[in-house]
Length: 281
Image (cartoon, rainbow, N blue to C red):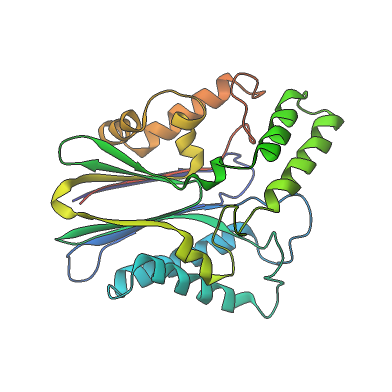
């Protein structure tokens, strides 16, 4: 078995909101990977005294423990239980009904001698490399399928000069429009305080013999493909397999540095937290 992971904050002066981990059961058979990408809240109150890194560490740790220790639970059931467990820790001190309460995207995979199970919620990604060398990206497309009027607001923001008051105002309007679609029917879903969202995740099972490797990516790492167009998902999986997770993050950082004003490659953050987990079971 080969395991490698790397994670790096987008801004060295700010805490990393991503979470990445791998666990192997005491039996030595199989394993689990869990990767979370914390959702950065706007610069306003969000009803919780805790930070996003606090939330991702607890949710990710609970998801990892439940997935590896309770193989009778599906990954969706483990996520629901992890959300409930994390919410219980701070329900007495925080307003978990707030739209901006700490939340995260989730990627998980669990393998045994017979199967590989997967779960993806929101815009992080899992790449399944098959035994024949082909790569299947497991993606949750709902965040990319925003209504036309919301996409138009995003385009309007990107057309305005960075740092301008007009762009800031348009950005707030766009943010409110996206926020209104979070965790509602017809919108997109992230793991926050409601365990019911676990049932919205993209899940599946693949025969173990058909899988050569697994690569989990937060969207800050996946932008090598989705934002900068440096290669395909297959190219991305190949790069990580050959050079390691840090090599992919380094390539992303180089692309970000070459476009610091986000002019050539429009994106919400000039630099984003990035996390990569690679497993060859």
